Image (cartoon, rainbow, N blue to C red; front, top):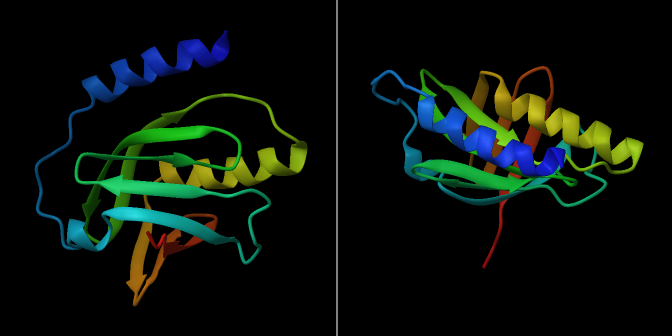
Length: 132
């Protein structure tokens, strides 16, 4: 039942979010696309972690639950408002999911080095583009 309550609540919260209008210093097109997390704090994910950024928000999976939300790039930081489903997985997978969610929901540095995207807060995600 909890899973079903999260979606409507997230939709309401996302609809209520008011972002200040400010220029972004990192082009959105450098972030837009589908990415696979290849490292969480220098450790390979136990399950696939994928994020898809579009101009109007992001979706993905943390290896256990679905993620979705809105984001902005301001002054080299990625700030987002989001939510996820709340299914239970094995304890180690839940630890991985927790690290991914903390990075996605806290202001953090974002860097783009060639084909690698780095998202950093107290944890670091290393992402590579998903090739079609």
